[in-house]
Length: 152
Image (cartoon, rainbow, N blue to C red):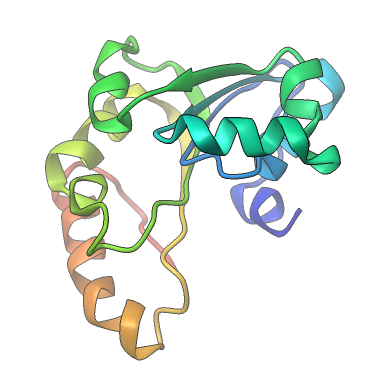
């Protein structure tokens, strides 16, 4: 719920892309019982199996959520321009998935986000030692990729 409140409300019928789905709680919340269109991207097929076993993840399979398995860097290239009202990007650490923090990837996200859309990019605590050292680079790459009004 905290992520969804940070992303901002969507009009009914909105479209959200959830990158690095994990247990799917954000996608389930965004789907709002089928009122919004949600697409998820998860690299790890084993995570989808974990979701099948997790009773709190069952909404991923019963809410009309479109689930894609694969590398988000490749999959986002297939979406048309201006496809989504909101994008939630919650990647693993930079050391595990540096390509999900690249200017090129961010440019694709900017391309598929509608003009008044919002990107929520989880980076952990920007004041922490771990996230903090990458935070300024993330902000710079987002701006270089075309995102305006980048805020923490």
